[in-house]
Image 1 (cartoon, helix red, strand yellow):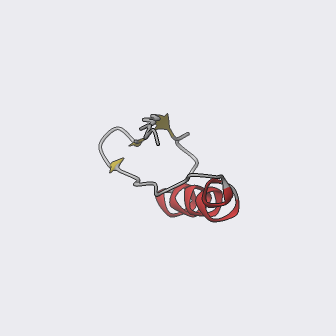
Image 2: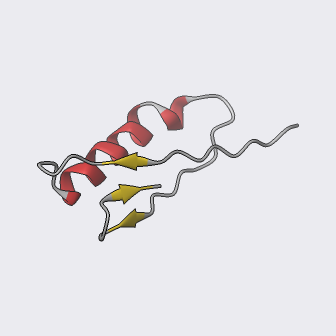
Length: 54
């Protein structure tokens, strides 16, 4: 069995609220990622200063 780690960075638009961004990411995990074979988990890190998600 192989394990892979994927790191993705995202920058939100000024008009996208943090709560909306988190909701979108949560929905993506629930409705898509978690249904992929071998999926384990995602973690979201959010930098308030520059509005980047990791």
